[in-house]
Length: 231
Ligand SMILES: [Zn+2]
Image (tube, rainbow, N blue to C red; front, top):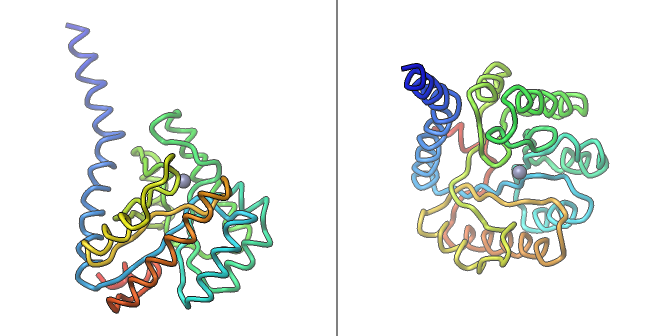
């Protein structure tokens, strides 16, 4: 009897703590996909930066092509590369939080993930970053991190297309461009941390191809907050 009660209790708690934020994310992503298709917009998003090599290269490319990106910053990397952060701010890109140390809210104790989220917000505030979006590391929320973000008044920065730019081997960039093309626009998840030259070049190449495709179809290229204002 006790065992059945215990299984039911843990099942209910798991549902409440992990599954309900995941379900909310699925609904939000579906809605985001619909808005992107309806409005014909392309949103380029970059996680885990800023970095010393890849981020400045990306900023050069975005400036050359007249586009703005949305950067989900890690607090620890903001602290180690403040000069790149200043460039991101000066060049008018959207800046948002991606936590302090990139803890997976499904793999660490819930209170540890809450501390990570709060520290990430505090670092951005300390460095004068005005932000309204949070993207949880690995896209994983638990009920406590969800509640923390809501209490701070930030919204969640989900995506509609995964670029695969951290995979080994890397996917064909054409397959990613075609996925966005099929959807008629979208929010593309990429990364601008420094790993190796091959991955760094892939992000740049994919960014260039997506912007060229946007130009061909006449899609509007905007930041994630801008598209959310459209709904
Ligand atoms: Zn990340």
